[in-house]
Length: 68
Image 1 (spheres, rainbow, N blue to C red):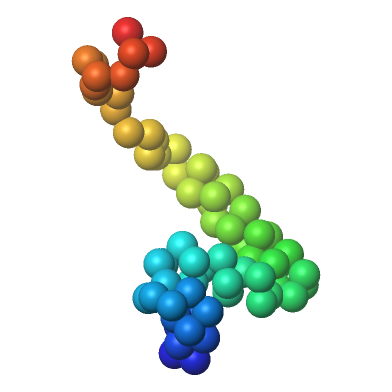
Image 2 (image 1 turned 180 degrees about the horizontal axis):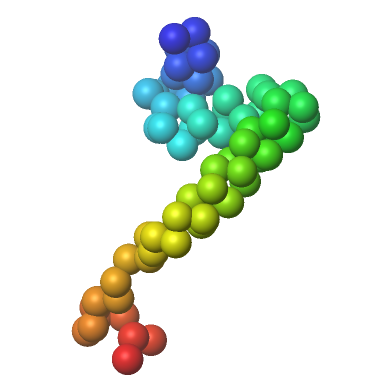
């Protein structure tokens, strides 16, 4: 909770989840970042082995100008 209190004082408001995550990442050592990246990559590779598709279906006529 000290992290949130420190950020709150620095920002003069309650920090967003993204700001907390960014601050946590800034505080990590290079070794911690490397391990995190490696673990995430291994998770993605394992997930890919299942052959399951996790892509969201496209919505036709979503209002975007580039949708066809």
